[in-house]
Length: 145
Length: 238
Image (cartoon, rainbow over all chains, first blue to last red; front, side, top):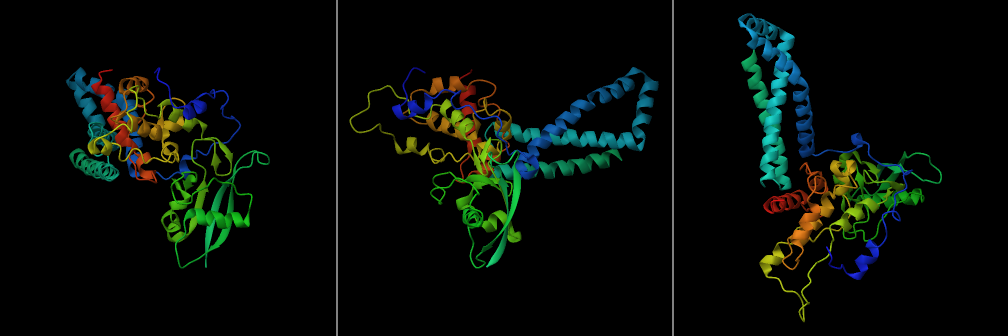
C-alpha cells in the first residue's frame, strides 16, 4: 500500500524490527496445565487427537480389510479375529473416535459458514458435540456386542 | 476480614535465573467483594517488590491483563468471587506466551507488531470534506463490537495459534481490528488489506476454538470477525 499512515503511527512503524528485538533470555509463562480451557477448546483439541488416532489406525484397519477381501477363508479369519474381546474393544474405540471426529468436524464446518459463532452458541455447540458423541458411542457399543 | 491466599508468578531478571511462585496471605474485607487488582494492591503493600502494570483501574486502559486462576482477564474488573470462588485462593501469572520482563509484566512487542501489520488506521485518498467523512447510521452500526477493543492482549495471549506462531499469525486482537477497517464504509483499501492477509498463516491459523471470545473483558467476538474476513477472502476469489 502506497498510502501514508498518520504521522504518529509512522513514528511507531519507523522503529525497525531489530530495534524492538525481544530478549531471548526472558522466560515465557506457557504451562499448559496452569491454563483453564473452555469447553470449545477442549472439543477442538479432542477433534485433532481423534483424527491422529484414526490416521494411525489406518494401516491396521486396511490390513484387516484386505484380509477379509482376499478369500472366503480370509473373510472368516478376519471375522474370527475381530470377535475376540480385545480387538472388539479396539474396534469400538476407533468407532468412537470416528463418530466424534465426524460430529465435531460437522460443527467446525457449520461454524465456517457462520453458525454458532457467538460465545453462547459456541459453548452450546461444543456441549452438543459431547452429548451426541456419547450417545453414538453407546449405540456403537450396543451394535458391536 | 478474611484470608485470601495468593500465589504470584515472580521473576526478577537481576536476581532470578528462572521464575518461581510466591505464596502470600492477605487480609481482605469479608463483607464485600474486591477486584483482583485490589487484592494485588494488598499483596504489594506486604511485598513492595511485586511488579505489575495498572493504570485506570476500571477496565478502560487495558494495562492489567494477566492470567487469573488460569483465565486471562483484567485484574481491575475481575471480581475475586468470580475468579477464586469460595476457596478464596488466587493464582496470578503473566499473560501466557509472551516474554516476561518482570513478575506479571510481559513484553508486548510481538503483539504490537501484529497490530501494526494490519494498518490500524483509516485509508482514504479522497480529499477530506469540510467537516467530516459521513456515514449512515447503518454503516456506523457495522463497527459495533469491533471498535471497542482496548488492546489488552488477553485474547491474543490465550490463543494457541498465536503461541506457536506469534510472528506469522496476526492473532485475534489484530484480526478484530483488521475487520474493523475492512467493514468501515469510509475505508478505501479493502482489496489491499485483504491481499496482505491472504496467506496460510495471517488469518487461516485460526481454528475457531474461541479461547479469545471466552476471555475478552469487553465481551467482543474475534472469532466472528475472523470468519467475516475469511468469507471476504473467499468471495474475492483469491
